[in-house]
Amino acid sequence: MMTREEIRELLQRLDGEPADAIESETLECKPWEVAARPFDSLVREVRETVVCLANARGGTIILGVSDRKRTRREAIHGVGPVDAQDLRRRIYDGTEPRILVEIEELVESEGRLLLVRVPRGMPPHTTTEGVGRIRVGKECKPLTGSALSRLMFAGGQRDLTAETVPGVTTGDLDPEQIGLLQRTIQAEGGSPGLTGVPADELLSNLELIRDGEVTLAALLLLGRGLALARSIPQHEVVFLRFRTATKYDVRHDLKGPLLSTLQFMERLLTAHMNIANLGTDGFGQLTIPDVTWWVAREAILNALVHRDYFLRQSVYIELHRDRLVVTSPGGFMGGVTPANVLRHSPARRNPLLASALQSVGLVNRAGLGVDRIYEELLRLGKGVPRYDADESMVRLILPTRTQSAFARFVAAETREGRGLELDDLIALRAVTERGFLDRWTAAQWLQLSEGEAATRLVSLRERGYLAPQGRGRGTTYRLARHLSDLLRGHAETDRELPLDAEAVRLRVEAILGERGTLTNAEIRRLSGFSRTEALRLLHSMADQGIVALRGRGRAAHYVRGPRHTSPKSTQRRRK
Picture 1 (cartoon, helix red, strand yellow):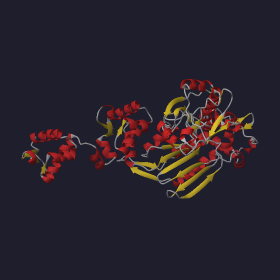
Picture 2 (cartoon, one colour):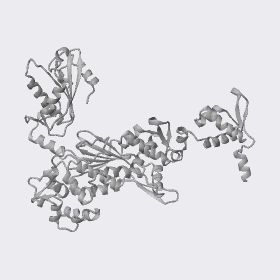
Picture 3 (spheres, one colour):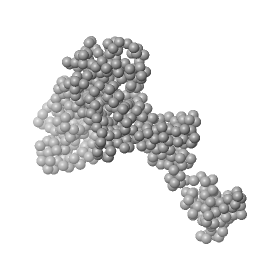
Picture 4 (cartoon, rainbow, N blue to C red):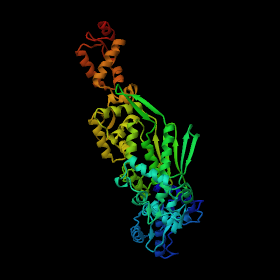
């Protein structure tokens, strides 16, 4: 929602513009003129506006601003001494289901305003008098029968795929698709009670046929092409392969039943995917595709199961050089967002379709599909998948480029019995990409609280994967040196990580062998040590006869000591 400062900026525009000009889908200006209208009438209008916003995206009502005025002084008249808490209670008591708003006071020079903050609700909401409205653009429209139905389906109160389809009979279901359904149950390990049963019994057990009538889920899974085109023309999967950022060279528009569409998509992706073979230090090869069919199938099924079938839009599958993108019509529902999709309990828009696919063995109804997508991509050395979403769509972006070193590392850990959990993989991938990680950034990557994220980082430190820098809540973590060398490279590691004492000792010996002299300042620069740490190390090396101090003050420097072993002398001894 808009901040107080943003609202104040909008109010500045009222000199020269009417209040309607600053309104939006989530912002409404309302007058509060007690002298012109009874108090109860004003409250009733505010309640109806609250219902209107709650049935859409929520928003803010600025109470005390009139429309159709050309100056700010005329437009802002304020609300006078109205009690904000009393108004809040009246809104709560007068809405069904109850809507609990927050009300803030905003005092301007022209008058006292109230900002009524309306949360996005679980529609449909009405007033207790039975008035229902919904926000469309800048207007509050009546909640008609079709709009009410859509709200109930979108909110999960009703399941569109469980509705029977008028004019469709069992004759519109394709026997070949029913046979494919039966074979899929056997191949995917579907529910045991579905194996080997007659077709009529199978469709009844899956609840695809109810009282002899065909559900939308049945039509989507098994329908003939003509019946699908006639009854649900918005059902379409469009595949595009892009050769540049904006130009594609392959396109397929798929309008058939879901199981056939999945089969065709598997052939398409298999034909267009690249496969890399990575060596693993004498333990055979890793075969790494751009993306596995399991991951692609899960992404496509999620798009088809969760899409909004009210919207006359297609599911798009785009294969780019570095990513696979799956876009489905309809936003997230049930409180799911891109920021919590990994942790949120599953929310299904089309439960019957999801249940049927779960019984067949294609969909994990426990909500583990997203976890598996993350884990499989990371184990193959890919980046973390990304979700984008708004009210009209959900887009899943699956990276296909492979970081070979990360894939080899995960394979080696698994082979040695040091299995990495999903949270481990996400955190290690984040540190590999960023170079460091603190509890706050880790919380965003892991979609956990800061405390939970900190616990995961400490666990990785204790197992030797991460090295801490700093203390307390501000501790940052980098990859342990051996792992940083492997995943980020020696040059990047040397640039980012402080050397330990033994590594500095070896480096000082090597440089003295080449140059013959070093100063304290030079040693501090190459090691990242403080002056005291450098002196402590040099005194130790001098005591061992490896270096010797020459000069004093600014002229002080170190040379090879009597026990220093130069690379050249080492080579001569080996000969």
